[in-house]
Length: 154
Image 1 (cartoon, rainbow, N blue to C red):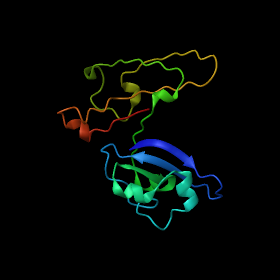
Image 2: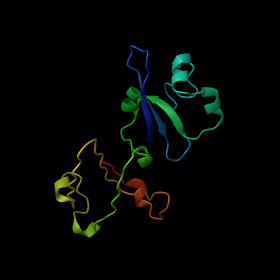
Image 3: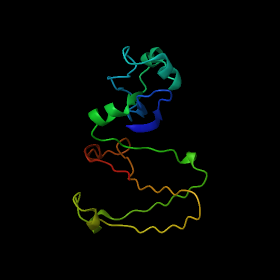
Image 4: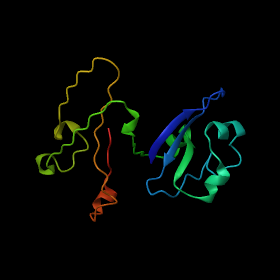
């Protein structure tokens, strides 16, 4: 799932929090509360605030859906994040890798034993966002092991 945006519905004392997610296969939406077919929980104000029209969404399944944060936590055990670097005024991207033979084959118990990089940044003002991602080759590779192995973004 890709996080498209999170919203805390204003004017509500309930502290309702929503995320707009996208299934990476571009079909198969969430079927629970606040799905496009849920007629019980949606309110006119909430639909307007989230700019969501369930009737239009029912006509075409593109995999994008709204979900309450509480439902996300209850029903999903893994979420993969995606981000849009165009949101930031300044950015720098460094591509590098290490040979898998240099470290342990599978060491999910101790990250300290895996190959590491040290990054030093001097930031005079503002915020600094750093990310480390592994490429998603599930759609471009004939190697199907990547479909069974988790991909991490930190």
